[in-house]
Length: 74
Image 1: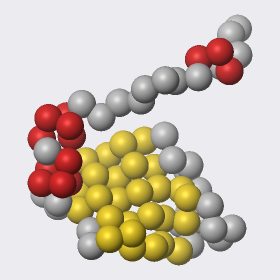
Image 2: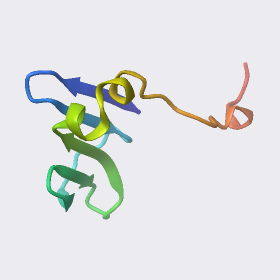
Image 3: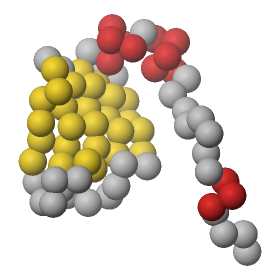
């Protein structure tokens, strides 16, 4: 997963899977979900991100409850 913030566009892009998007769906004004050719979500784009999320939330994007027990060790 990759999270990219474009300061000039005030856009947050969250890439869930590194595959090409073949379609997109607007969930609401300024929030778009990108889909692969099988209709699965590959990413999310949020325009006006600092206004929608707030600067503090934008600076502190993280992952909670990571399933570390599923990650193979060594």
